[in-house]
Amino acid sequence: MMKRVRGEDISSAVMNYLKKRQYTDSETSFKKEIKCSRAVTEMASDVTMDMETSVTNTVSYTTCDPEPMLFDIQFSRLKTFIEEGVEEFKVELVAVLYPLFVNLYIEMICQGHKAAGNDFLYKYQDEFTANEEQRTMMDNLCGVIQKDDVLSKVDVKLFRESKYLIQLSNTTLEYLLRYLQSNDNTILLKMFNNHLHVVVQGLHNGDHDPNENGFIKTNISVETEAAKKKSSSSVMLRSLKDCIQKIRDGPPSLPSILYYSFSNTYQGLNTVRVSPDQRLLCGGFEDSALRVWSLSPTKLKAAEHTVDISKIHSLGDHICDKFQEDRVGIESKALRGHSGPVYAACFTVDSSHLLSSSEDTTVRLWDLDTYTNKVVYQGHNYPIWDMDTGSVGPYFATASQDHTARLWTLDRNYPLRIFAGHLMDVDCVRFHPNCNYIATGSSDRTVRLWSVQDGKCVRLFTGHKGTVFSLAFSPNGKFLASSGEDRKVKLWDLGSGNMVKELSGHQDNVYSLNFSNDSTMLASGGLDNTIRVWDVRQSFSPSSHSDTGVSLEILGSFPMRTSSVHYLEFVSCNLLLAAGAINVTQ
Image (cartoon, rainbow, N blue to C red; front, side):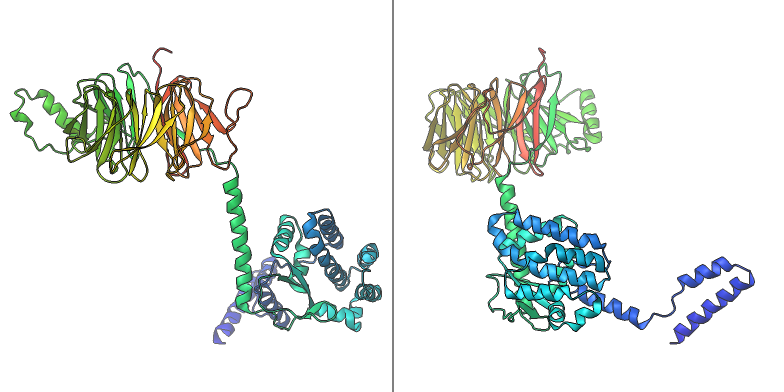
């Protein structure tokens, strides 16, 4: 109380000062801004508004008096929507029109829109003569021409002060709410909130007891708070499931593509890989070298060597230059050790080491801290065309010209398994996501699936008309994609061993394949300088082709101009990493 009196004294002193200085305009503005007290009616209005807007089943609320014509426009629009809408919802929604019409007319009279209200009544009253109750109400409304008539007529007063009970199914209610919320229907939403009580059939244990006129008293508790929450959550859950299903049934979203282009590759680029942490990129070349680039702003720095290099080299000029590079950092590092072209390379799962295979029949392990060769793995008798690392454990597999594929572990320099069965070169190899199987593609035009546990062939896929150059497993482990010299991409069901799809569209050899993380899309690329993205969901019909000979599963085709595609990989955020070399001859 003392604080309020002090505040009023300060306001009075300021006003006296303004009056002495003859600031009459400022005094008037100051009086408008000062609000030392509030009327009881205003406080009661604010409290009432807060209570109304906090009701649990509120759809919308507005305190603005709308234009009279809006009552007719919104009601007429809803009536047309119901009568011309979906037939299965029409039977239930017709019952909504009668209570809405009565409450809209009463609202217009209470707001003083007498002329507009009479036009509204005479326009639609003939629509509501289906039973004795409606005919009696229409006769009563004809006698309501001012606000006092609403209170004097018992039936009209009861209708106004009660909530009319409407029973709708869950799907019908969602259908109606989508319409009401899609347009400017503030008046209708206010009527639903204040004068209608919608019961969703099948969501309540207790039965509502409407009186003989079809409405219920507003002071009767018809459902518990828990039932209301359950009803609301059920509707939201159903809506969420419908949205998820629509997204799944619709076409996948095309990925963004990040393309790394190698220019001036006179040494001949054979292979490209990006590390799992996406910090490094490596390429294998015909001149027996591997080169590693940093994809981050951090330059490559070699850790301190454990070997005293001064005891090996007598001249130390080039050694000093190397130490300077390791201390400052450079953008790329060259790894030399093979005696023949490097045909394949891959990073370990933790991105700490790099494996490479070569025409010299060896596999080398490179330490990416010191950028030195740690281990040489020997076992093949002919060049090693491809290799892959498993996602579980220190295992990797190789494919060779000696007609075999082999399984290795990082801590042993000899193979653990030899997979023999192909009649010609094994050109590609890939681990299954669970690492219990590996797949191989060969120049004998077949694809084989092998068990890692016993080294036996468990599936044989035939159908290609040329060498198989690339393989890819879907992340869900159900499908295997293969491509090669015949320019076709084939999709195989691992469970049944049957071909699911054959995708046509490439104009040259297809060297790279990769599935999206959700197994809905497949990306392919090769010597035709294009990346193609396919929809490979099982829900699609068997492959068919357009007039141009391209399969209808095609989602997008992205030309790379003069660059052949050597590498494809989907990563997080629907991003497709790609890499290739610009053709020197073009």
